[in-house]
Length: 215
Image (cartoon, rainbow, N blue to C red; front, side, top):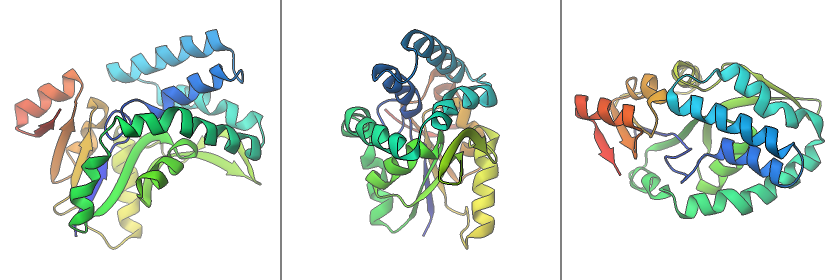
């Protein structure tokens, strides 16, 4: 049984769950639409360019979680999953999971997007093991802050190593599927890196090193 690791946004999903969550909050009037759109676009472009300040982004992205009750947040999240995520799944690539599921591999989603957003998406996909940036949760409320190592760039490798230390698994024969040059550290860490509709930088790197590319 091998480990089969998958990025989520623009890999399994046809879209970015983090980006769409912020815009969804603007649509329903929870955050200022103009400011949200402006900052979302800035941070998303930084991400695409490979120079995202992850701490600054997390302070911005998680702030609304600290301003509302968990019950209210869960209701908004349920609406968001129906309105935004299910279409991204239907037009995305969830079929990438199936060959590994059929051969008994251990499926894992490894994503920079926070676990408030991604845990229910992993559940929809039937993937129990999720490594995501952790939204701090204390006394039944989200604080609006991250905790632990963000699952981003080299942080993904750190978090996977932490998981391996707690579980009797090995990276021997492992796979990782991703679209982004930001995931290069983890792609180089596994046995079989696979680029999925990759950005230009990752595509060139994959071509240079003979990695499999799925478009």
